[in-house]
Each structure stands twice: as C-alpha cells, then as structure tokens.
Amino acid sequence: MTAIGWTGALVLLAFTGVAQIPAVAEGSRWSVAALRAQDPVCLVVAGGSVLMLAVGVVSLGVAAGKQACLLVRARRERARFTAVLTSSRSCGGSRR
Image 1 (cartoon, rainbow, N blue to C red):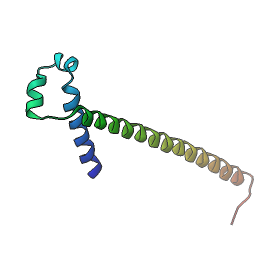
Image 2 (cartoon, helix red, strand yellow; image 1 turned 180 degrees about the horizontal axis):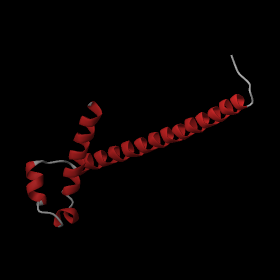
Image 3 (cartoon, rainbow, N blue to C red; image 1 turned 90 degrees about the vertical axis):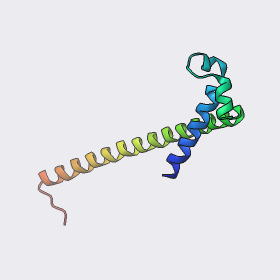
Image 4 (tube, rainbow, N blue to C red; image 1 turned 180 degrees about the vertical axis):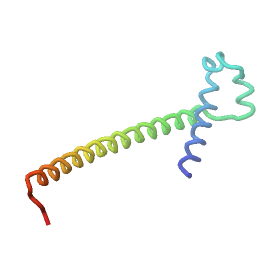
C-alpha cells in the first residue's frame, strides 16, 4: 500500500513538472503560468520523479522477467518429472 502511495506521489510530481514544459503545455488546455501559480514544482524535482519512476519500471520489468524464467523452468521440471514417473510406472517398476 505504501508503494502505491509513493508511486502516486511521484506520478503527480512528474506530471506537474512535465506539464510546465511549454512544448507540452501548447498541446493541452492548461497554461504554464496558471499551473506554476497553483502548484509550483521545480523542474529538478519533476525530473527526479521521472527518473525514479523510470528506475522503478525497469526494476519491475527485470523482476517480472526473472519470475517468468523461473516459472518456465518449474514447468519444464514438472513435465520432466511427470515423464519419468509415467515411464517408471509403464515399465512395471514401483518406487516405495
């Protein structure tokens, strides 16, 4: 729950900072001056938020990739174990 709160705060900081960039603000309905007056966020803080979010997304991707590899490995092991168990039963062997 705490991670969700921190992520939400970083997203809001990053959005507010990115929205103050004139090129981004031109394509939207808000004005940079009004946004800075209502919620002044330093571009350095917004940039740090974007960087931290990027690191978090990359870390999440790496962890998901590792978990996927482990899942594939476990599935292969289960299939190999099932094949060995099936072949030992079909040969008349029993293990006790």
